[in-house]
Length: 373
Image (cartoon, rainbow, N blue to C red; front, top):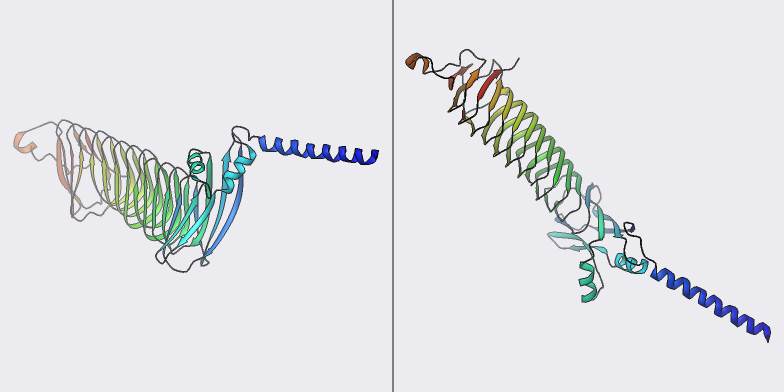
């Protein structure tokens, strides 16, 4: 009898012990600043050469070209500290990745609050600590659209057209061969390297870096972000309100417009047109290849241009209230003989055969035409 009583006491004690352990685990909380995460994988066969659209409002998107006719996704689900372990795990379990397949559109999306009722979904929407980082491998010939908010976006090894629209992030493109890559971002840092494609970049305060790019049309614009270019080939347009434009080894017809920023281009082969406000303009033209009339205009910034002696170009340089100086002796002041010595505010003349025309004008800035050694 005593043995049965002691056995019952032992069973009850063990049961209470498990209850307290379970309750303690249920009430345990993730420390502030810590992250709970796990990873899920998904595979889908691709039935058509359609557009692949990827949506993720909370987290990064990394896309890599894939040789197989399938889409493979590795999703890392994360939740920052603050809730209980059980609550956090429930939120993670309600976060998934889905693919909707149509004849013309494949829509891949990170979804949050799956299976929650309306109240739970409202509460979940106010939990920005939940995020999903996506690594997507897909056939590189698909047209690619990416819609995100504030996570990093990267694409590599892709051959289809690209259209990216994000809020504030870093966007990286490398090893791209397509007809067009387009990026719209209000506050992005953009890095593009080893691209064979036309480019259209619309940024804000973030820096744009373009390296080894060749395309029919290359266009980049910012509000205050700087634009850095290197080894660019194609018809190029660079626009900024207050950012600086700096570049090396550019080839093609170049259009520049800057309100308050400076522009420095070295090793230019081709032609250039530009409208500037108060920033200084420094151009080093290795080989002039203009075929028509070109212009450089400045409100109050100085314009400094260097040309080789063998260049074939007709020049006219005028400064309304500044000075014009030239290293070329045959760039003269056409008014000097008729009106006598006048302030150095105008120079005209030809280099070589003068096959194209460049007009340089500044209202308040100085103009210097130097000779490359």
